Figure 1 (tube, one colour):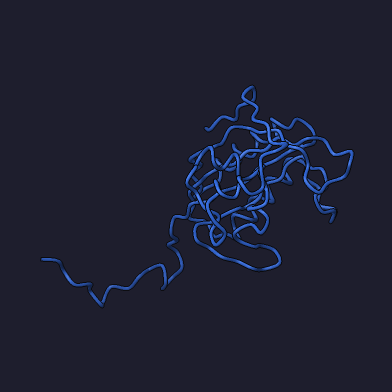
Figure 2 (cartoon, rainbow, N blue to C red):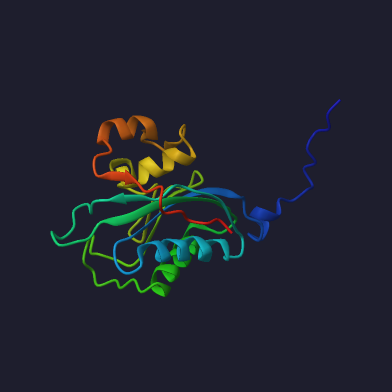
Length: 189
């Protein structure tokens, strides 16, 4: 026999907002300026040092050609980081931007400009957002092999919510210009 729910128990999450569900997060990290490997490792370490964040996986590193960038832009190193967190998507975005700034990222308004570090929120649980400062899932993730290929190394059956399985998306966009760099590893603390 099972008990029926007690209608007198109040859900603390809705009452105070203090409890937050654990969400699975997919982040893409990239660098094409400075010590690219060091910048990516710094991002992983900084994420792992964030309270209420548990890094659960780091993909292999890929070298990729810049997308929609200046002709003189250098190749990127890219990886995907999986984590679980109780942080809100907005707080996680703030943290990602603080990590970028700590590694010398300058935001001058140029779209797809070279950068020391880029930390993009791709998926935050089942959270959807269509605000100017945060669109979830990431609006161009399904078109970017440098996100999809490393992500598939960690979760081959994953899907971009509302778009489709990443394996099908990789077939659609192709993986030209995305080269796995087994000589470069990122450590998970």
